[in-house]
Each structure stands twice: as structure tokens, then as C-alpha cells.
Length: 498
Image 1 (cartoon, rainbow, N blue to C red):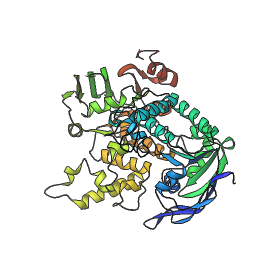
Image 2 (image 1 turned 135 degrees about the horizontal axis):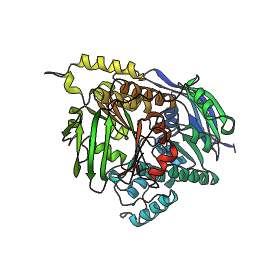
Image 3 (image 1 turned 90 degrees about the vertical axis):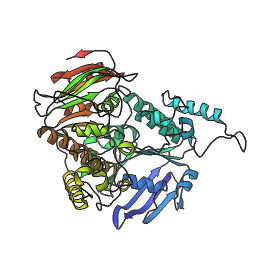
Image 4 (image 1 turned 60 degrees about the vertical axis):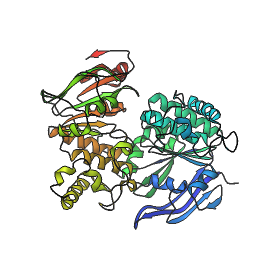
């Protein structure tokens, strides 16, 4: 029997005559961690969707355990191919154990499910991941990071021969990433093969045995992880030398554009006070559960505050809905892109003008104007799409994020809140977003920048607000914006404004 679990020969895929994957020939060994990297739109997700049966290839052959197979979702699962998707595939109205065992429920008899057994097994899987999530909790009540842990547990629950992980760590803390890597190593010892896709090149280099690089749907190379460094990986992904990642910081003015005073949300946020200056990038850092997203949601009116006040340009404002936030020139790019940021079954124009449609409407919608504006944003953000009519579900994660950015910018904000804006996008798209934020602050727009990546916080922000358990533990400036100081405040070792 062959040492290879998966082989592909001349795999190609086209959508509407556009070739997005071209002539891919690879061999993946049994019991290895095989990394796949590339820019957004390089073909990574398309390739794994062929392996797990979501797409049928236009050309070429797939071999699994030496058998030439015509994949389907059902056949892939039956063969032991399971995927942890980049975007969550969970049912919000079901609880944790129901999601994990959906379609593979334990039964007491023909009529009754063995719910106790499923709960017990769910606790065991989550314990392996060092996470304490109630198996009876509804998915809708979980944080993004907790949902990711449920997705991982769900995939591990199946008897896998091939486990595909598509950006599994983008919302996890360093501790959770370390736990996941230990789990991956244990799975490999049991003979399971793992395909690992990530834009975090450091992680790819650390955990993978071999790494395949794709560019524009074409094969670039396969290298042993030990023989290639992060810089060379990035350069081969984009086909050129990458310049400095972060643009220079813009000097903010002394004028306060946003003031938050003694803001409280019962059980979530405790006495939050800070100010945002005109033309500033104000960073928010902290561990998962610190309350950063909850604070952003309160500022834009998704959550109701128990007490406190918000001032915009010195005037007290009652912002109790996202519509009120838009009217006060506040835009929000959410962390959960597909959950609340965009409508994947709508086309580009419909998404971009979703919030700002009023400015294109008198008695009827001016469709010519909406399309002109959409073309402007496609050029401005270099959005890769076959046409304006393309539904967002057919775009890569990075291009979806750019559409979400354009949608928020089309409201003409003066304050822009970014919540994990680089989650799940490649190094080149990250640079584009950093430069976009730089251009915003140069034009006088003020930005709140929430990120779990300390490198981004340090590289982008004029000041940094550090949160822990719903409280501000420090506001850092100048030389104090460094990894050590931020982590001291994030873990509660230090408190106070510096």
C-alpha cells in the first residue's frame, strides 16, 4: 500500500469560465501535517472543497488511499475526510452537544436519542481542548473563540483519516493555539493526516512537516518546513519582495472626537472611560473575554448600556441602535464577517449599499449610481471578482472583508471601529488594510482598532487601551506600547494609565 493518503493529478476548477485552480499535482503522506499557504484568492479553499466533496473539479483526478474517487460531501465523510471550516458551520438555535453530534447522534433505541452519552462525550472532547464550555449552552450565546473550539471538537468527534483545518487559530489565544497544536500532534501519532491552512506563517512553519504554496490558482512549490523561513514563504506567496508591513503612524490632533465616560453594561462592562482623538488609531488589546467586542457593540448601539455616557464632538449622544450610530458618523467593521458583516447570498453592489441605500434613493433606487460607486470601491480596494453581480459566497475571505470595509466606508464615517479586521486574510491583504487605515487617519478620520495580534497593535496604534474581564487595566502610550507591558495589563499584573 502507498505511503500517500491523498494524491491529485492535474486538478483544475473553473467558475463561469474563470479558472481559479490550475493543474495541481500533489502527494500528501499518511500521518503528516501538510500546510497550504497563499494569498486570498490563491485557490486554497477551492482546493480543499474539492477534497471534501463540496466542489467537483473541472479537470483532473483525486486519489484517496490509492482509489480514484469522484468526491461528494457524503462520500468524503464516509471515507474519513472531515473539515474545520474557516467560517463557522454551526446551528445557533441548537446547543453545543447537539451541534457536535448532528448527523451522528447516539441512540438508546430506534425512537430515543442518548443525550446523556452525547453530553458526556462532548465534555471529554472539550476537556482535550482545555476549554470549559457547557455542553448544554446554545451556540448563539458563545463567543467567536468558543464557537471555534466547538468546530474543532465537532471535527475531532468524527473518526477522521484526513482532518482539514482552514484557519483554525484566527480567534484563539496563544494558550488555546498551543493546546490545539498538542492535540494535532497527538492525532498525527494516531495515524491521522492533517491539512493545515493558515495566514499565520509563524504557526505554519512551527506545526507543519511540509508546506505547499499556491499563487493565483497555480502551484508554486512544496518545501519541507525546516527548509524555508517566514520571509521566504511570504515572498513566494506574492511573487515579489514584501516591503515594510506597517505604514508610519500619523500624529493625532489634541481634539477629542469621541468620549466614553463611566460606561457600564451589567455583567459585561465595568466603568469604562476613554477618549478618541481626531486622526488617531486607538488600539484595544486584551485576552479573549476581555470585553473589547462587547464595548464596540455598545458604542454602536447593538448592546444597551446600564449607565454612562457617550459624547461625539463634545455632545452627549443616545446611541441605541446601529442606525443611530451611522447617523452620528460611526462605522463598525465586525469581527464575525459572515455572521453579521455581510450577506453572502447577495451580490457586491447590494452588500456595499446595504447601510447607505438612503443616499441612492429618492423615489426609486438609482441603480446606475450604486453600480458606479461599487466599481469605485472594487478599484479602490483591488477586490478580485468576476463581476458586480457575483454573490459574496464565491469570493475569497480577503475579498469579502474588502467588501465589508467598502460597505462601512460608504456611510461616510468620521469614526471607524475595526474589530479584528485582518482575521483570516493573507499577508498582502493585511498590508492593504493597514494602508487603508493609514489613509483614513491622514484624512482626519479617527479609528478604534481591536486586534488579538500584538504585532498589529504595536505597529498601528498611537495609544493602546488594555482590557481584562470587562475593565480597562491600562492605557499605554509611546515607549510603553510593547508586548511585555500590554501582556502585564492584559493579565492583571499591572494596572493604570501610562
